[in-house]
Image 1 (cartoon, rainbow, N blue to C red):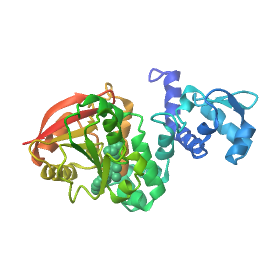
Image 2: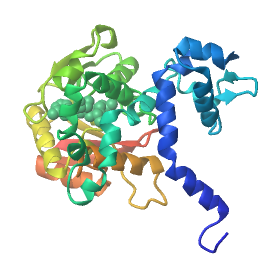
Image 3: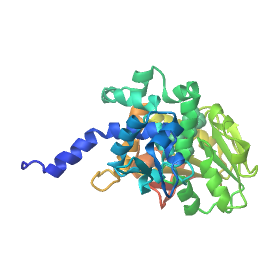
Length: 339
Ligand SMILES: C[S@@+](CC[C@H](N)C(=O)[O-])C[C@H]1O[C@@H](n2cnc3c(N)ncnc32)[C@H](O)[C@@H]1O
């Protein structure tokens, strides 16, 4: 032990350094859908599980033991495997399942971009450096990863879609347009609470085409494909931009906001739903700064923002920030009005 750090600090830092190993093992068990193959109560023998997953029992046992050391699964000396409270969260039938995160974080698109993180320090875009193409073009070319991304967005651990539906009164709206709305989870949550409004998901063509009819709230959700840099559909009373602006640098955000403004009447409202970055990391949640870093890895200069930084985007696009509403999730609702 030295004055600079305790043995506990040394061990904690050592585990942080090796976090990628844990992420990779979690993806491996997610690829096998192993959590779904285990009963919620009770256990199965590792050989039986291995047969079910078409893999070898001995390496599978080693992986599960390592995860169990982090509280993910329980592994007995007799080779029995059972769920722990953490591993249950990897089941696909869990609300806000972390299965989709386990599939997403180490998928090649994101993982390889992180290998080029240093490109951002020279003003570059790590994803571009890794793949020679931008993030959304990459997703267009890799449909499996794109649908995994959409599912991950809908199941993100911040539970932002439920939190938005619970924090804002949508009862007076006739049409809510979710711009960059992904697979429609925010609208499904809102329409489940408010029987009056209809919804419109506007997103890239391949994203909206993948939303099945049964996910459209009994026909109350329409879809439209396109780019928010070209055009945003008019006619809604409420426009949502949830976790969209954080994907873009300031000048692109202002273009998106101007297109929203052009689509909106004076009485329409724009809800920007984003995390508001706490400048002091001693106060903020660690996961918020990791989202900021993910934006850096995927897009270079895209980022999480403080409230003042959001205000600065709104003004040149013809909006004023009317109020900021806290939610049960790390995201806030910033209600902007046309000026
Ligand atoms: C971080 S995701 C957020 C998804 C959803 N709003 C949510 O919070 O779950 C950003 C979304 O922006 C969409 N997007 C990216 N570029 C777009 C464009 N040019 N026009 C429309 N949507 C776009 C992506 O396809 C993706 O669904």
